Image 1 (spheres, one colour):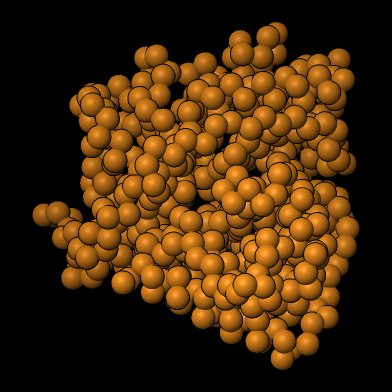
Image 2 (spheres, one colour):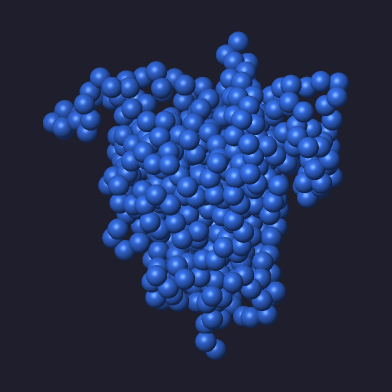
Length: 515
C-alpha cells in the first residue's frame, strides 16, 4: 500500500498532540492529550517525562485511527517540541532520574544571577582565547550562544539535576546518563534507545551550543560542569535520523524532521526569506524574524538563535520570548476561577468595551524579552470599586498584545527595519477581537493563515522534505494561504495612551521585585 501522509508529533508544554497531514498540507486528523503540570515549590515547574511519552505515543495511534489509515501509509514522522525543557535518563534502563525541569522553571535563577557577576574564563595554556579576556560571562556566553544568561535555558537546569539528584553526577561522569530536550527523549523512545540525537534548533536553546559552529562547546560545558558523554549528537533539522522500533508494530517509519516549536512555526508560516516575521500565541508568545544565513547580535535584549539547518545551510533568527501568553487564560480559569473553560474568556471580556484602566502584567515566571527580569512577578494595577471579572479578563487578553508590542519594537531596532506585516498562528489567533487589538497596538498588518497549526505543519514539512514527500521549499511555499488580514483601526492618540499605561504597569511590576 503506498504511503500518502506525514505524521507530525507536537509535544507542547501542557499537552501532547499528533496530526496527520496530506500532500496539500491539510490536516487530516488530530489527537490531543493533556498531562499533569507539577509545581513542587513556588517558581518550580516539572513534567513527568514518562507521562509525556505515554500521551504522545497514545495520540500517534489515535490520530492515525481517526484518519482511517494504517501506519504503513505514513511516509515519515516529524517532531516539534517545547524547547529548553530538560530530561536526564539512564542509558541502560531508559528511565528518567527525576522529573523533567520545564522551561518555565525558575529554581536556578540565583545561580544565573551569580554567573552574570563573573568574568569570562581565561583561555587554557597553549590555547588561543576564543574571545578577548576580561569580559563578562554574560557577553562571553551571549557571543557563543546568542542567548542571555537566564534560568529559562537548559544548561542551568541540567547542572541542577547533576548537583541535586543523588548519584547523578557520578553516573554522568561514568557515561551512564543521557541528556536531552524533549525531541531527544521522544526519538530515544521511538527508536527503543537506538538513536540519541537532537537538531540544531533545539541544541541552540541549551546554552551549551556554539551557534556559529553548530557544535557543542567545551568551554560552555566546563562552565556548567556537564560531561560531553551525556549529550546527543547534533543533526540538521531535515534528514532521516532513524526508524521507529517495535513501538509501532510492523512498521519501521523514518523519523525525518525535528525543530523546536517556534522554529517549526517559522518554517510552517513559510517565513523562509530574511525579514519575514511570525508570532505564535501558545502557552507563551514567541516572535521570530528570519535573518537568513547571518546571525544578528541583538542590542535590545532579544535572542539570536538557529532557525534550522537544511542540507549544509544554517539559517538564523532573532527571537523575542514572552513567558506567559495563553497561560494567562489558564490562570484566569484555574487560579482566579472567573471562567470555567478557556473558551469563555472571549465572551467575558466582550462584556466591557475596555479594561477601565486595569492592567495585568502576567510576570508569573518573570519577564522575558525585552526585559529579561527573572524576579518580576505578576501584578494587577488600576483596580477600582468598579473593576469586574470582565475588566480583569480583558486586561489578561490585552497583556498578550502589549507584550508582543514590546518584542516587535526591539526587533525593529535590531534589524533596522520597519515591520509591515506580522504572520500569526497558535490557539489565541481564533480570537478576532484580540487579533484586531494586536493589529491596532502594533500599527501593522496582522495576517492569519488558513492553517494556524503551523508548528506541527512546520515539523511535517521538514520531515516531508527529508523523505522526498515534497520536492523542495518552492513546492511547499505554494500551499501557504491567507485566512484573514487585520488592518489598524484605532486612533493613534488612543493607542499611545494605552501603551503609556502598559509601560507604567511593567515598570511597577519590576520595581516590586527590587524592593
